[in-house]
Image (cartoon, rainbow, N blue to C red; front, side):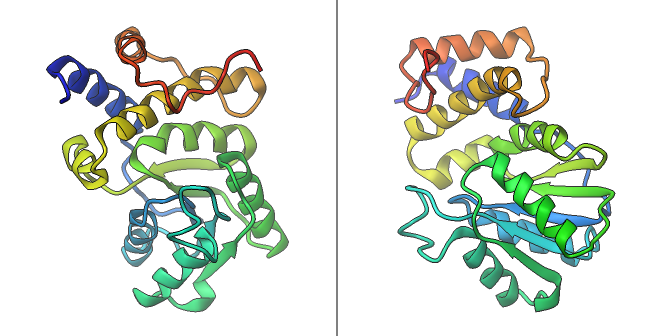
Length: 218
């Protein structure tokens, strides 16, 4: 049973993780591989609304996607896009990335090799990974404008869609820890975290939502 305080803290962090950007036309839409099949659907929706003339899906497999997408995240995402009516020539695929940094670096290299000039990127991720994806792209793809996007849904709806309350809150807490730690390792730009969000984070850690934290002594 999730207490009112835990729910309020998790929802506050959920909201912070989203960039609240308004989608606008960009050079390319890049869908980041994950377990979330909402990513390809949202990417295709934005493409069909004229927000990007080209799609890149990037992602290999991970322990959470291997069973569901055995041929790789990017492969399954591209197949989904074709099912939804996207022209094959408008969907590029990068099947090797295994983390957010590789998603960005490999997608950038793919587009450079294809001779596609990129001025702006519409970056589609899981809802609670928007800020992390944005911060990573700003670090690893300087010189382009980055617009973050994800499937539009409330925290309550996402909570229900996953069906595992502890997993959802563990993921929110883990993503926030990375936002604080990774800039010092050169993985992303630094972003200020409001004091209220940090307090919520500390309370959730104290409540045991720590399964997605990375060790600080390595």
